[in-house]
Image 1 (cartoon, one colour):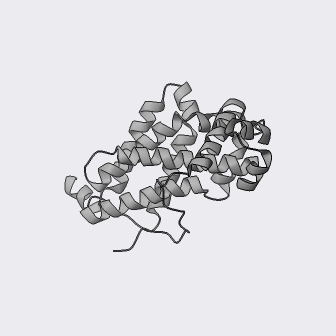
Image 2: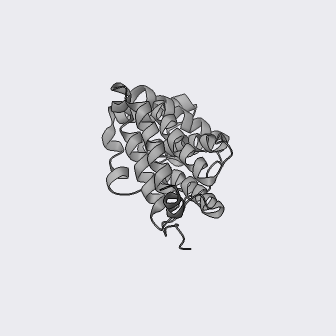
Image 3: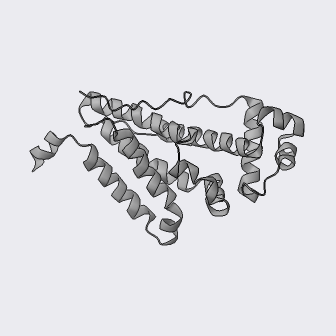
Length: 211
């Protein structure tokens, strides 16, 4: 069977968590961005919240943008890990669909992501149009693992581009979460996403058997 894995470089293992000093700095960055947005967050603001000097901040992060990116990565790592840990037992396909749908739900309620999307949407554009960032790679890693499980138990039919296609589908709904929530269509969209993924991942012979 053809592997569904891509040749994309892998990010570091998720779920490791940041060291205490870095975690405090990331928490300070998160608080500042939630309150002010990216453009209005300053080195002074983050340093004061973290209880460190400006020199220490620059030595550890280099810039506010780097600190925000590191904070987003940790946000995705912790939230994706929590969703994965809370995924109920079942086939690989059932677990993947649950992970995908609940990941969208969880990230739609992230104050950090919401603040950036509302105040500084241009900050996210390169990771939609130009390249995958570390945060997307974390989700992609989880999708790869779940696809492996589903392929092994026969509940999923996967191809070389399946993981990337799933990431783009999930990302599309997640990026539209604000308008979906505002129009009252969010829960219905998540239900449709789950149905779409269920049908997409079901092996073709199983689909034919139900025809």
